[in-house]
Image 1: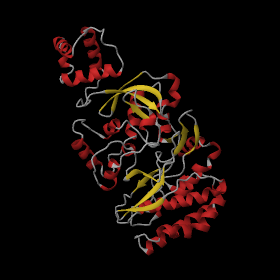
Image 2: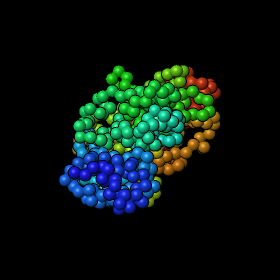
Image 3: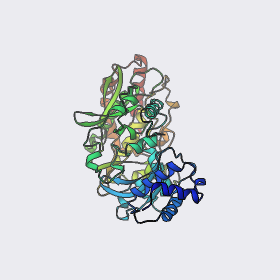
Image 4: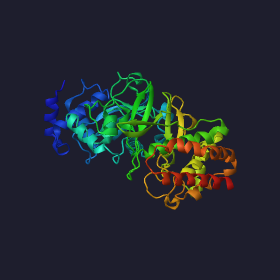
Length: 454
């Protein structure tokens, strides 16, 4: 039986210090690696261990920060093992042992690239899972984490997600560090979670640094946090308006939600997330329940369009619409809503599909949500010609031409009849000024009438 000291000595004799100048860090990482891979090393000679060490070091990118040791996890979908992944500082450096029988339960972005650069695609998927660096409060978060967790060397937002096992309230994927952990023990759908990360991101409060939180994997640049309210997992979102309008995005989120639900009535459908307004510390936020259940996941369309060539904006729209099947009215009404309220930010990350995690099948469109960046939320101007569109075309008039408006006259008539009451119910206490508030209602009415005239 070899010892650690013998291994280090033999590494030195063979000149491997040139490959691994920080030898103690590398040996510790290597030993953790062989342990996590369940190698039986008791009967392996020290020479064989050195050979394995040489291969191990050679697999690590020379640009990778080695301040924390690599660790091998099992990438999971609930309790289903998908593959093994070695990670270091939040970056995957190796994938192993893909469970072929469960490829269909991988994230759809990975499934589409299973025979290509799977490691690169996984890292891209993982980065998309983390808090955006541009969100307010992120610099303070990293400072507190490095101060409170100096022994664990949290280096980045990707590293933070790794330390928190990648757990989310948008799906059921996670990285399992040991076999004794099960989904029932760690998931946030049925277990409580810490408020520490969320409080810091929302209002700057720091209570100690419990990393057990879905806020480690919430995307978007607007400040937000998850909170359990009456046993319901709810997302609380603020506003990024810089022109002094209090609660600009939360109010528009509520307005869009109400309008969408009215337009969906002729289809007896409820594909719109309900939003309400709440106040914390004299600041206005929107609140909505999680639309993902313990047995589903939200699939953003950006996962489905990666690497796909499209001829033009019409082709892109038809490709996305093809996933909706008989419920294609949902994407049509989403674009109608975006046209009416001048939504500027319908990127491919905030609309998508709902997938059953036990079968891998698409079960429905995701409900319409995340429509707060609309109706001049961050501008003192009310010039409609300055507002761009997404995701299929940058011009709202051209984008709305993708939809057969005549199929939605009943929905538009319902909105026209209720727009005044809905609008003033949302904006009656806004600080945006009577003249501006009245002008925005006029614009909404004009855009509804324009669609009815088509």
